[in-house]
Amino acid sequence: MSVDEVLEKIEELKRKYENDEELVKLLTRYEESLRESRPPAYSRRIQSLMFIGWIIGAAFFFILGLYLFFPPYVFFTYLHANATILQETLKAVYLNPRILSVADALFKLLGMLMMIMSVISMYQAHLLLGRLKKEESGKEN
Image 1 (cartoon, one colour):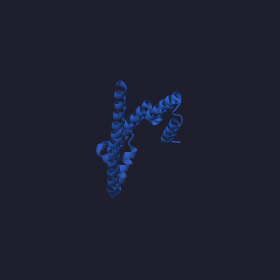
Image 2 (spheres, one colour):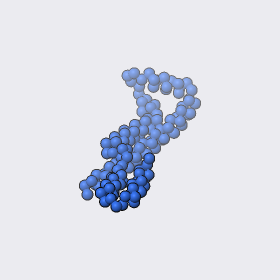
Image 3 (cartoon, one colour):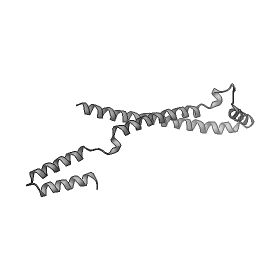
Image 4 (spheres, one colour):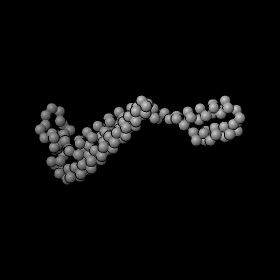
């Protein structure tokens, strides 16, 4: 049963028992509390956790997007320590340069998509922060 259906039933009960003032007052208070109630998804703690999640997601998407958009061989031309994967990648590209033309375009596309997702995640976090601030200012009034 939805909240609207419950509110309709309360209105019916108020009309049916309009002579009983105490019952009408009780039903009115119940009706007001139902109108002011919010679903659990709007709780401050859940919104704060969602805000933090969107920020972490945006950071992850941005870093991954940068990594995919600017391939590692641009940054790591000087090899040191344990860079065997990078060495093997560079060797494969050296032996067959056509691999790079396909992979580079794909990685650039994925990188751009990841950076777009990062902007969208930051926007979601911005919307949540605005809602949290609006609630906070509403409580002070």
